[in-house]
Amino acid sequence: MDTKVFDIYSDGIGKKTRHMFRGFDSLSQLESYTRACGVEQPLWLIMTVVATVRNVIDDELEARAEIADDLEAELN
Image (cartoon, rainbow, N blue to C red; front, side):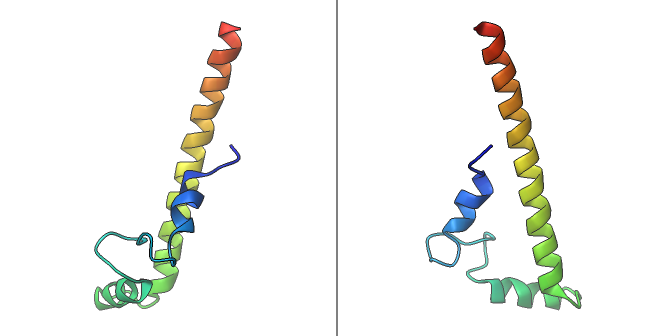
């Protein structure tokens, strides 16, 4: 799939059109909260979670696109 939903979503991050995580106005706020929860390397944890979510969404979209392509091929 050429256009990834997460890429579209993340395009507005940092441009003040949307926030990465609901309830946190900046990465700095999220980092502070994560550090207060006892995480020694909060940015590492945050980026790992973001990368995982992106991969899961991309895999799901690709699987759905394949199913749609198969259905279209059967109908034609």
